[in-house]
Image (cartoon, rainbow, N blue to C red; front, side, top):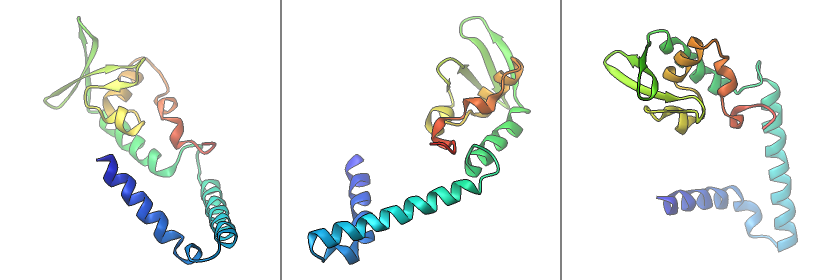
Amino acid sequence: MWGDASRRVAESFNAWILGPRNKTIVTMLEEIRVKVMGRVSKSRAFAETWIDEISPMAMMVFNTNVTRSMQCNIQWNGDDGLEVLEAVYKHTVNLRQEKCSCKSWELKGIPCAHGIAIMNHFSMDASQAISSWYRKET
């Protein structure tokens, strides 16, 4: 699995440096440096267009989860604390570890609907639980 991903990254990088790759080492490195600096500059310019401190795509996922959280019901579970019911599915959320049995929160770094429902129950700001990966400063 990681071998395929690493190979795709290497192939993508090799295609990206196709022009400089056939030049002398100093010229090649200088051209790659200029390309990287241009890409960093574009990334920073893109981040400056953000309305919030969190990326627009992450906010879109978060807002969708907020809407879904309104359909969830919270019940006390004597063993694990709180349990979230969404339609016919039950999920257990651990706020301290930022984990849910649906695994979405762990995979994306954005609170799932179940985590948001519990945070709302405790009057917590769920947007603070969005991973730092999605923040402008990162």
